[in-house]
Image: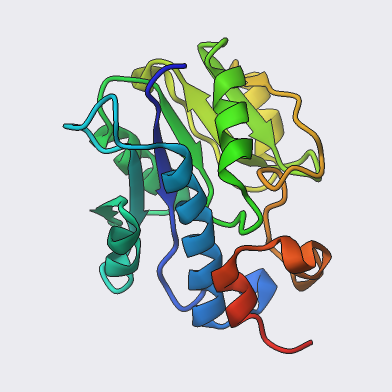
Length: 201
């Protein structure tokens, strides 16, 4: 499998996860569990001189991701797709994936399996469990990326030439968390930081 770099944009403002009505601590915990799974999936061997996990976020929470072993790029504050472009620009010349930082039930093995599938296509993506958005976007050549995250991004990425990867709907990779009901559905599957930070229901 190619030596992937994975970019994770994390919104580091008080409005992060606004639809979830989450506290700042819970929003951060969700992102940290997501990034921890990515770090576990991408050991530093292979390309030790280049970052394997890049988090684009605000300076106020950057140290949390640095402590996990991620390389942090300061978010310039121009929106999600601009943050994604910053991360791609900071990656090396090898294959680059982009993962949204709201998949707290993600396991390293699930990401590894998705990247192994993605290595077969110049451009690929994994939709969310609702088949409307996108959780993972990959390109074997970083310059080929055309990120279009946001509402209904699955259709835009299909139109841009990304191949949709077939993964089980119950995969933690596909279970992004935008609402309280989505978080409740995952229950004990979420990572330890999210479990510890969840408000009592």
